Structures are given as structure tokens and as C-alpha cells.
Image 1 (cartoon, rainbow, N blue to C red):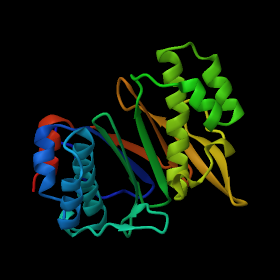
Image 2: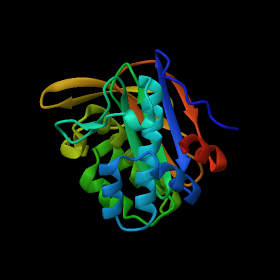
Image 3: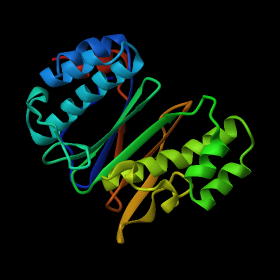
Image 4: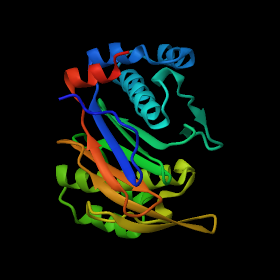
Length: 239
């Protein structure tokens, strides 16, 4: 069924997860502006290029609905820290292994992250050099293999979502704060350069083989999740 692309309701966060496919890419290219097409052409052929094209087109469709203009008329700027921005709506985009995730809200800064779990990674080694002590303990206690990878990416996606919502990205040392456990919304205080800011963090179901998380700088916003796929995604991006 075709997802309803509607303006953001007050107090709502929309999270959209979509798997990239050739038909979606073909439709999405028509929504990109000249600069975005030039960026696409500079990228190597492959999944990363397709993720960019589909992700940017979904952003244009959703931001257009949120700001009452057509997808091609959406102006996408860049903040001082390099984060893309659209006047009137807060958003975050992430992608991994052919899955694009996008979160939007009006009330506060938002961050989303998604990672493909089913891959070989030196989880414990990376955690020990990157994570806070309590997070390292979680990774150490997980069984080697898939369970440890899931534990690692559960932490990683929450931390990434938090720093994205903050707006300064990975300039914030990941070992300087600890991400919460569990999927329910939890408050975490993130202190950067002496300034404390509360983030409300939750896990997001992105499907088998993926870990995902959402962070927002406001409490109790209602989550609306959509997963357009196949023909529904192509039609959503057709213009």
C-alpha cells in the first residue's frame, strides 16, 4: 500500500526506512537538482551512489510535504558543522548496505543512524578504543560472533544518533558519554564543551540484519514509522 506522505503533525517524529532498488533510483534522479546530480556523477557506480540518490529524493519529498512546497523547490543548506538543513524542519539521514533511514520533526534537533550488522568487524577492539567503559563491558559480555556484533552496533547507532542530533557530529569524542541500553525512549545528558543537553534516545526496528536508533532533543514525541518498498517507493518518488 502506498504510504501517505503528509505534513509533520505537532509533536510527531516521522521515521522512514526504505530499501534501495533500481526502479526507485530511476524515479529519484528526477527530483535531484543540478548540484546533486553533479555529486551523483562524481560517485562511483554502486550501492553508495544509489543510497545517496534515493535518500536525497526521499528527503525532498518529505521536507516538501512538511514545508508546503514541491520536492524540487526544497532548499537544502548546510550548517556551520556541515550538517544538511532545511528551514522549518529538523531532519537526519543515514544509510547502510542498501537501506536508507530518514527522521524528521519540527520541535527539536533529531538524529538517526542505521548499520548493517551481518558483517565481520573487530567489535571488541574498536569498542575498547572508542566507547565509554560501561559500553565496553557490554561488548565484552556478549558472545563472540553475531551476538557481539549486535551488541556493538546497538551501542554505535545510539551514539551516532546522539551526536547527529547534537549537530557537531564526530567532533564529539564517543568515549565522553554512554549510550542507553534497550529500545524504549531514555534520557541521556550529553555534555559538550561544558554545555549539557538532554537527548531522548530509543532503538528503531529497521528489519533483520540491521541496527538502528533515534535521538531527539525533546521528550515524548510520538513516533510514526513508514517502510515504503518496491512499487510503493517508486511511486512515492515519481514526479
